[in-house]
Amino acid sequence: MTPQNKQVVNEESKWDKTQTIVSKTDTYGTILYANNTFVEACEYNAIDLIGEPHNIIRHPDMPKVAFKSLWDSLKKGENYHAIVKNLTKTGKYYWVITDFTIDKNKDGKITGYTARRKSVPKSVIDKIEPLYKTLLEIEKLKGEKVSELYFEGYLKEEVGKNYNDFVVDLFKEESLKNEQKPEEESKIKKGLNWFFFGDFL
Image 1 (spheres, helix red, strand yellow):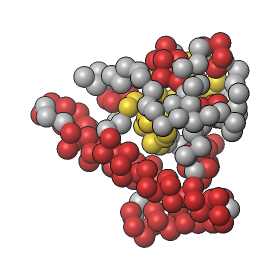
Image 2: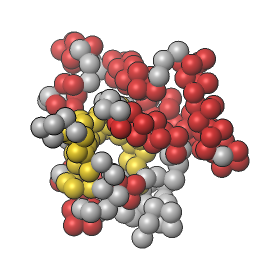
Image 3: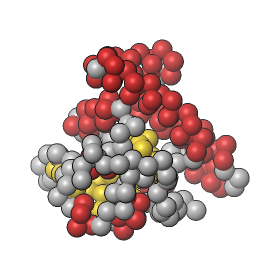
Image 4: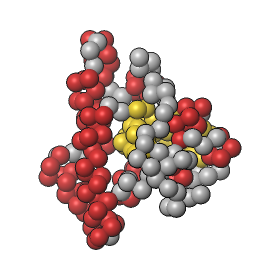
C-alpha cells in the first residue's frame, strides 16, 4: 500500500521518544538500513522498509516544497535539518526533527545519506504546522511552483533566514522553554550535535 492510497487516521504513533530514529539511504532515497526505533515508530518491519523509497512514510499533510528544499541542499553536500510529519503503516503520524550526515566515498563522491530523527516538543509542531498547511493548500490550488515562491517569500520577509536556520532556531527556542535543568540548557545552546549524537536525557 502506497502513501497515496493509505487510510490516514488522526492518531499519534506510540514509540520511545527518548530514542533516536536512524536510517541510511542511497543517493536516490532508497532505504538501505533502518534501526529498531525507526521500525517501532513507523510500524513497518525492517524487511518492509529495506529497498523501498523513503517516501513510503511521507504524510499527505506535508507540502512537497519542504522535501524539495531538503534534497536541493543534500545534493550540494550541505547538511540539513527539517521538521517532518511522517506516516506509519497503519496511517498514524509522528513528528520528528531530522539531522543528515552526508556519506561519501574515498574520492569525496556522495554515496548516500544517514538520517537521525528525534521527537520534537509540541510547541514546535504548533508553530510549524500552520505554515505547512498554508503551503499545502497553495500547492493544491495553485501548483508546486507557486507554493515554492510563497515559501521563499515567507522565509525572507517574515523569518529573515533560510529554512534550515529557521528550524534549528525554532527548535532551540522552544526546547529551552521546556527544559528545567541548567545542564540541558547549556547543551542546547551548543547546537544540535549533542541532541542527535549525545545522550539527550
